[in-house]
Image (cartoon, rainbow, N blue to C red; front, side):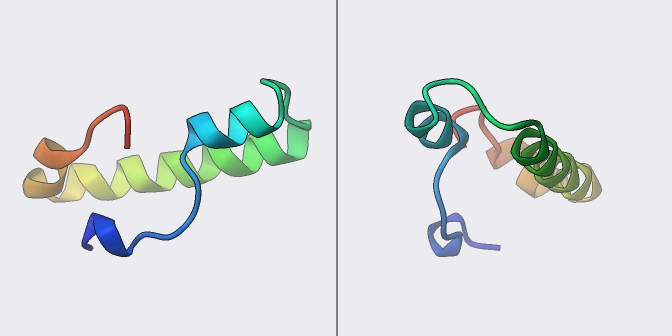
Length: 55
């Protein structure tokens, strides 16, 4: 996956729009998406090296 092709907002942008408070369903959805991405990165060491907390 090429990072430039990933569409959407970053977590910081989402939290800023929501003033730091997310409905529980939205927070759980985002947490599940983050967990999926982290699981994928552990399968590929090249991706893991390029992942940053700002991403």
